[in-house]
Length: 61
Image (cartoon, rainbow, N blue to C red; front, top):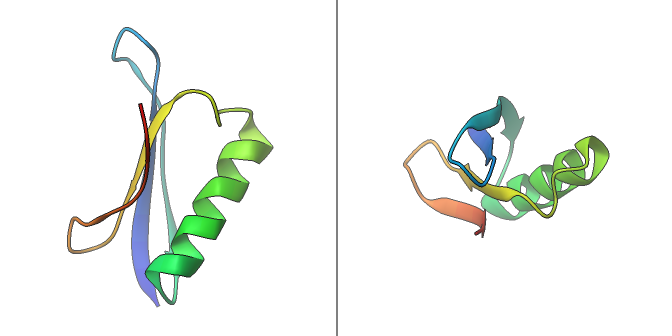
């Protein structure tokens, strides 16, 4: 399992969520990240999910 990082920002750049989770692949991490965003009500906020190597697997501005 790899550790991914999900970060959500307000429009002014303030970080409002900084969470890590484990997934076995980038595709699984993307699905998990989207689920977490939906669950917490942050789908419309600026967000990113990065892999352990720094690759963006999910991004919304």
